[in-house]
Amino acid sequence: MLSDYHNKIAFETIRPKRQSAPIVFNSAHSGSDYPKRFIEISRLDNFSIRQSEDAYIDELFNNAPKMGAPMLRALFPRAYLDVNREPYELDQKMFSDILPKYYNIKSQRVKTGLGTIAKIVAPNRKIYSNKLSLDDAKMRIEGIYRPYHLALQKLLGQTVEQFGAVVLIDCHSMPSLEKTRNNKAPDIILGDRFGCSCSPVIIDLVETIFVGAGLTVVKNQPYAGGFITHSYGKPKHNIHALQIEISRNLYMNEASLKKSDNFLALKKILDDLILALMELNITRLFNIEIKAAE
Figure 1: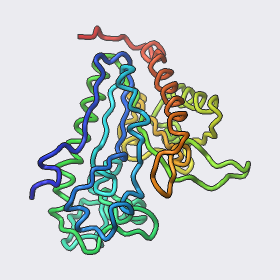
Figure 2 (figure 1 turned 30 degrees about the horizontal axis):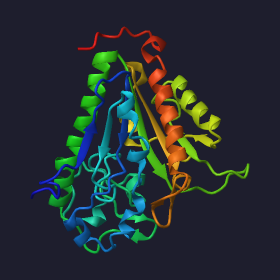
Figure 3 (figure 1 turned 90 degrees about the vertical axis):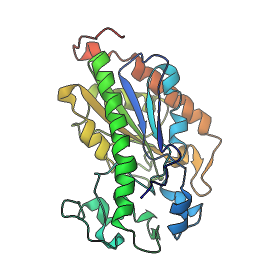
C-alpha cells in the first residue's frame, strides 16, 4: 500500500549554512499537512481534527537554523502518526486485524487513546468512524515513523561526530493547565526524565531564561519527557535531551487555533533561549575535545 505521502515529503531537516554548536531542535507534533485520505476516513472535520496539533511550534523555533543549529520538523500531523511513541504502541480495539504479539497494546498512552496511531485528538473526540487495517498501521510506521527517527539519529550522530556531544531540544506545546496552589498555572514544563536525560546545567539554563522572562516554569510534572527524550537522552554518552512544553495560551487562541498578539513576544523569548544554548560551551563543560569541522 502506498503511503499517503508517497508524492510529497512528510518531514524535513532544516540545516544551517554552518552548524556552530552541538544543539539540535526537533518539532515532531507541529505538522499540519492532513492527507486527503486521512480526512476521508476520519469522523472529524478539518478544524476539529487539529486539536492535538502543536500548532506553530516549528515556527516559534524556526530561527534556530539561522543561528547555527539544525531543526527536524514533521509536516504530517500528530493525529495521523505520533513519532514520540514507541514504533508499535497501538490499541487493538482500533484495528480489524489481530496485532502481532510484539506490539505494545497495554501501555498507559494506549489506554488514554494516544498511541503511535492515536484514537483521539482530545478527550471524547475520537478520530475514526471505522476500524483500521494492520496494513494502514504498517504503512505509516514503515513509511514515515522509521525514516523520521533515522533522520533524527543522523542529525544527532553527525553533531556528536563534529563536536563530541549533542543537546537535543524536543519542542512541544500543551493545553493550558489549571492553576496550582500558588494560584499560577505553569507556562512552561521542562522534562528531563527526572534528571536522567540531560545534564542539570542544561535544564537549569533553560529554566533561568524562561523565569527571567517572567514565565512560570515547572519541571517534570505532569510531563517528564516522552519516547524521544527517554530514548535519545544518554548523558553518559554525551547525548543530552530536554523536552520543552509551552502553554498554548501564551501565543495562540486555543479555541480558534489562531496566533495571538503575544506570538512575536514569545518568539523573541525563544530566540533568546536559542542564543543562550548556542553560547553554552558544552564541549568545555564536559571536557570534550572538539573535532575539526570539515
